[in-house]
Length: 519
Image (tube, one colour):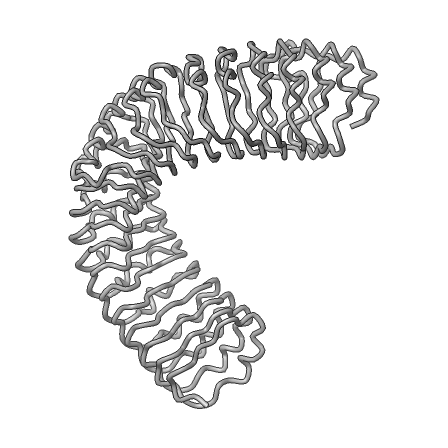
């Protein structure tokens, strides 16, 4: 920016957003004392956001006494937020997010009683939030401290701003409890985000009084106790993110609140993963909003059968239930979730066969089933899942062969069938997997020769065939796998010479060909 911009003393409005401006913001902008809110309310009188500006925020901006909107976000600004900005008594909006600012939040910002939006997210700010910030900023509707290094407690005065609509302080180091009355003092809050901090204690029941709440994210903290069924009183709730706490107390009725969520007709996402929820997953889960697209239950102590009513959530895209205590069979009715793209059911005690209806999930791209106690063979109907990229069915008790149909999905990136009892040969169709990065068939009962077509898997980096009964010689085509990093074909019945071409695999980090008859 030219230092002569300050000569344009009659300027009332500057919008240079989303360009490629670089260098420092000249101190001479402080001469533009006529900058004020333009007649078009959506425009900002000083908007330099989304550029590559460097250096400090000019202290002289404090001379622009009529300034109402200041947007400096998404640049490369450094240094501290000038305390002098606290003299901008008419400022309504202050946005300095996504820079490299350091220091703390100036207490002087509390002097701007007109301030309605304060966004300092994605910087390197540290220290405590000034004690009296909330006591004077009674007009705040938007507050974001996201992704900084702020610490300490949140001043109670910030929780008493009744106009607050968006309260986002996630990914910091705040250590505090939430006021029991927070839902009463934040009656207009729509987004409440405090994830990835060090909050602890019980989740206040009063959240049910914040009737406009759409997003409640308290993830990755230290909350404990049960979740109140009163959350079902939130008609606009869309996202409930509770993951990464110790909620549930391992209680057998800790999931009872799910039934109340059937009243939340706008709900789209529920994340309970990595907590202490126990008991049965209620059949009433099928009565949740048809808007639901994501359900996360992994890493808990949930037992019993997988509810067959899940099939009624027709718009479900993500379903994770891994690392629990589920028993019984995989319901064939899951095949009705035709929008499902990701499903993780591994590390449970599921038994029975993999239902052939899985083949109806034609949008599926990631599917994990092991370890479990499954039996039978890998259904050939999986071939209908032509978008499948990652398939993990390891450490179960599957038998039978690997059919050419199962390998007939060109989009595969990862296949892991390790730790089963699969028999037969590895089909030559494996060579059609041009995009595969990882192939793990170790710990099975596969026989015959390793097909030469394995060398056609040009994207292969990790190949594990350990602990089978492969015979014959090592295919010379292995030397064509120029990106190979790890190769383990130990504990087979291979013989003959080791292909000299393996020495040309310059990215190879691990090679294990022990317990064969190679020379």
